Length: 403
Image (cartoon, helix red, strand yellow):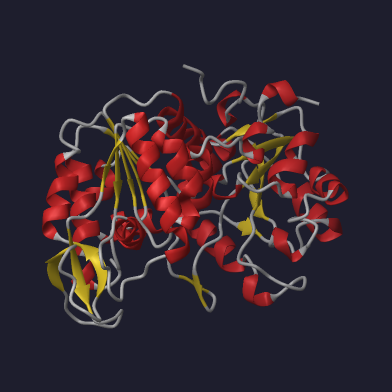
C-alpha cells in the first residue's frame, strides 16, 4: 500500500512557536444576510486553530466566501465568520479590510503569540482564482509557515492553496485535511474487501469518471437517485416522466457491460417511489416495470432499500456519494435516510463523500453522522480523489516538491 500522506508534514511537525502561521481554512459558510446559518465549517477548523494558538503561533487565517464577481463586495465579507470564530475561541479575532497590502500587514505584524486574525475574502482579488504568482508572493509576505486545512478547495489550483504553498519550505496540512487524505486515501489505495460503493444524485454525466474508477476496485456498485433512471431506461424500462439523460443511454449500457467484464456487480432499484412532480406531497411505491404514465421516480422504494442495505452486512468498506431521491422533501426521504441508517449500523469502514450526501446524513438525525467513520467536508474534492486524480492543493504539500 502506498501511504496517501507520504511526504506531507502535519501542523504537529511544523515549527509554529512564535511564528506567523498562514492557515488556509474553508469558511465558505451559508449566509442569510449577515447571519451564518450553519457554522460547521468554522467548527471543523477549530482543532488546528487551537493547536497553533496553544503552541504560541501568531495565526493568520484566510478563506474565500461565495463568488464575488467584481472585487470587494460587502455581501461576501468574512466579518460574520470573524465574529463567530471569536465567539467559539473566546478571544478577539481581528479582520483587516483586505487580505494583502498595508492593512493586512499592519494587523498581521501586530499579532503576538497566541493571537489570531482572519484576512478578508481572498476572492475579492481575481488573481486568487488565477493562481497568480505576484498575488501569491503578496500573501507570502504575511507569514513564515504555511498550513492548509481547507479540503473543500484542494482540487482547485488557486493562489492560496497552490501558488502560495510552493513558496514555503515550512508547509503542511492541518488536522482536518490530514483526516480527509487518510480516510479517502484508504478507500482509493487499499480498501478492505468486500467493497461496496453507492452512487446517487441527479446525473450520470457528473460521475462518469468516478464510476469508471470505482469499477476497477469495488465488488458491488449500487446506483440510486435520478442517476439510476438512466440505467433503468438503458435496460428498456419505461421511466415515464422521470428525469432520464437520454443522450447517456449508450454510456449507461457500456458501463453495465464493463462491470460485467470486471466481475463487479451493479445493483439498480427494483422499485421506486413515484409522484406527479417535485411539489407532490405524497408518493406511491411501484415496481420499476409498472411506473404509471405521467409519474416520475423521486426516491428508491422499500424493496430496493432492503436489497441495498443487505449488501452492507458483510461489507468491509462502504463509500457513498449522492442521495437516493429528493430527500429534502419528507415523502421522498425514506430511501436516503434508510440507507444512511443501514450504513451507520454497518461494521464496515464507512465514508460519505461530502456535498448532498453529507447534508443527507446530518438531516437523517439521531447519531447517524457520529457512527460514520468519515464524512468528507468537500463534495468535488472527495469525488476527484476517489477518481484517483492528484489534487494540486495536496500534491504541493509533499516534500518532494520543496523549493
